[in-house]
Image 1 (tube, rainbow, N blue to C red):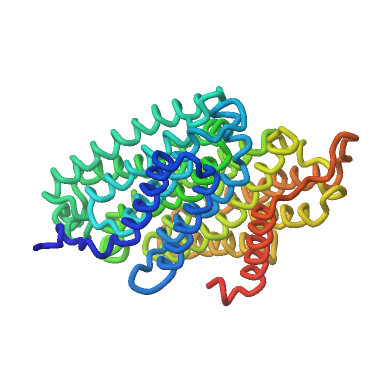
Image 2 (spheres, rainbow, N blue to C red):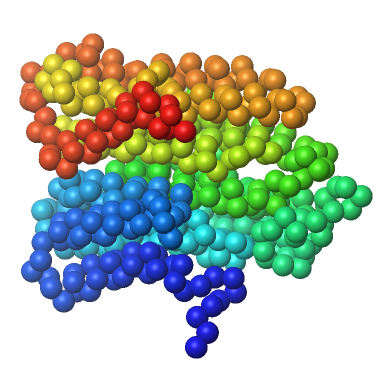
Length: 477
């Protein structure tokens, strides 16, 4: 019996099958064993995702973006476990857990799609993987049927996501029309060459495909959905979209730009227009994300704009098209993921105990919960790029990538002051949270927070890794 489909083998997708199997087991257990507390499924899913994370780290199934996705899924399900009180109230209107099992299964299915995307070699696999991710994400974003913000987030994400899907399909059609294949291989780009320049049809295909991928990473001008969806969606879903979905988007970008890598030196004129287009997108993303975050008062909305701004710094690596892109994108995403996950755990804890997701809800934590406040400080300091944190090194490498690109391509100097201004803006809006914790006094009704064991463990682990990797750059590289 032939176990090979195109250039793929069934065995290489064993981790993805395992993730889907865990999701199916959760759904079947929910149907046939209703007496089991639903919150147990969150821990079962987290354990399964963690095992796959270890498999993805090295060895036969090593997959950088799959590793990030599985780690993000593990953290999302752990966050959902601590967030179960709000989940029950937003679904059933009380503490009844009926209808929550799917909320723990869908991230596993989406994670399987991201892992498949990390192994994609053609547009068919890329498109199918992205659709698995987005369809699951639509449901997760609008899962809280008693919450108007969640329903609005799901509808907005669905409508704008459908547009990005259309762009991907249209781009794939153009790509097939100009190359005669769906394979994303440099040889396919050679077939579109004419006198050292790519044909108009191939450039049109590239533009449409990149536009679809830019929606997934939240880059301008495809960023409009992020602040509203992050604010309205359930906090575990916002965490998943901010980390796992963004990793999927950048995995797609790496895949789509792969055919252009050999042309960076052989045919510089061929990719010059692409490099300068990406630099404009990166600059617009940096400005919109970082300047838009300054006026925010809702912590989840602030992290939404933060996500846009961080995507701008990551896009700088793609401007250096002739360099080694994937390792630096992975390192930046890892630093961003650790800090962002810690921030969302803190927000979820405040939502559960203080009933608010505003920045003002952080007030006085430095006095009432000094240890927790310190751990939160580490995460936001890393997002801002404070020295001796992992986030600082990530942004440092982003600046280095731009300087290296300036040696290969003319007309990129203007991007450097944009990056400097946006990095400085980040210190202002991230430190609004720190100001609330240490400068604002707690209200008389603000009792010390009861930090759940899972939240405490995640905050501590993320902070240790952020400081350790920021202190020892050799480990980070």
